Image (tube, rainbow, N blue to C red; front, side, top):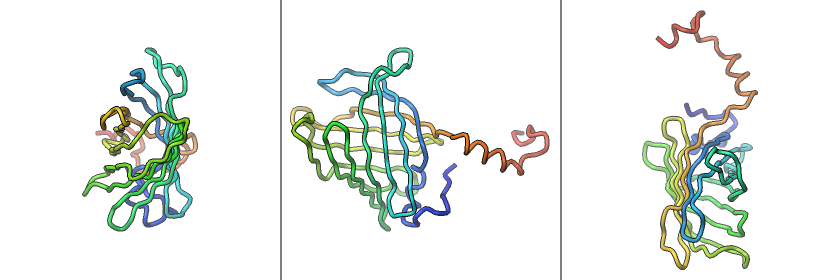
Length: 190
């Protein structure tokens, strides 16, 4: 279920499906880098202004699902206008800053983005642009990223399926609001 916080800036309502903390796993595969499974934690938060703050941390997983080493992290700010056009400013730990533009799909919680501008530090790996698709599917946040370099044409390189993380405070709040359940709690599922 998508909840819209009462203090959310009205311009951000179309992006409300992103809000919260998410965790899950995915796969990364790109020429010149080792193919790997990875874990990911993502947060989309707001403070009442006209943007959503974004943070993502990924790490390589071993065959048993244990953390092996950090993979990459990024942070940024997301906005949407009255025409459902989305803009994102993002910085990554590898020395890349990007401006992304895209739009929300019609009648579904899905965002297609493409880089408009890329700036790199001298220490960063070659990178010329990318595309991303984010979607809210059956309560999960799913995404796929594509990237290109001067040597490699645009191709998928990362994708993940993330589940909403529920904090102890959210569990306590849910427990306080169970008044709509039948007394035995079982009839609710019939």
